[in-house]
Image 1: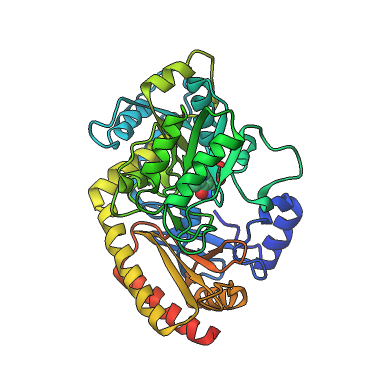
Image 2: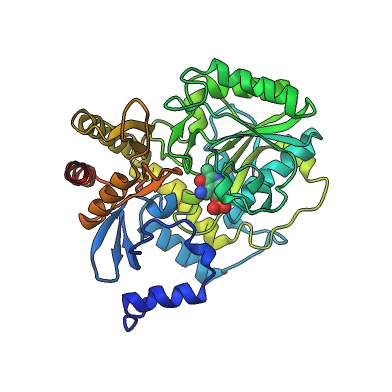
Length: 435
Ligand code: PMP
């Protein structure tokens, strides 16, 4: 429960003193931070009691909504029964979840098993280790502008200098230009980007790779979708070089795309390892991989243990996510609300030169503010004004990319048509005032 006796300034000052300054290195509102006290559905409340639509879903972790009745019921029941049971013992909850999660893979796509851990980066590391052990190859190809986490192994695959401490990076990661259709180094089209994978394997690896990792839509990198045909081509090249296809569905998974349950399904590609996190537990810390049984069996030749992995309370929350997405039609809602948002943004683009590009699918949507449509120079200051005006109007959004000019709109999946209309109206006003 929030302590009402503490004032806004006190909480900020004391957190800044007590917690490591590293927690401030991903600021959403650096000049005037928010103190949040509670969440309800798609909304959060600040310490003055003001309600906001959370367009970040707390970094895409709140999939169903805050205080969702099913998450509350299932986690509370589990918390009372047994708050932790390690995988050294058998327990019904993770077993049921593994069955339910594997059943979400496309029918006939393979024989899948589930391995649960606690954070996205941990699951990414697990995927890399599994791929290396199974293939007996070492090098992992990654895409520039990709984000897969900042713990040691995952850090090697996250291609942002600002996230890299000045220490030797983990070995064995080679990055490839990403197929950005708006401002990619090779321009639009996929052929030069696929050729770049071949060239990279030939020049910067031993020729045989352990795998290649992709986000179907690069989230942190500014909502950059993989263009049609790219993932299929890249998967073929990866497999030809002996590697496994690793799909990072940490942001795109669990219906957020609207059109599909998993991002890879939009590309007609079946990966070998699928990495999950964020919205998987509707805010509780849980992550994992869905992996082909044969790969998991090779990996099981050495011992592996993770103390909190498959914690039954977190797993109960994850079960509530699968159940509620189906019961409440949340994937369909993501599709409908995403289409409404995209149409509204395109209409705004007609009237506001600031909007250079609109990207994404469903409720993983972004729009890029530029000073000039030809140079695509980032409209950083205008972006800040727009973001502040939206906050004033009760809408929290996050700006990404080094130019901080790409707005990422990733609300909880329960967002309503009225919420989207309200956001678009506030954005219209904010864009008018920002120019
Ligand atoms: N993959 C993707 C696509 C992510 O966006 C993130 C986190 N932003 C991660 C992996 C890492 O997750 P975590 O922060 O839980 O380690």
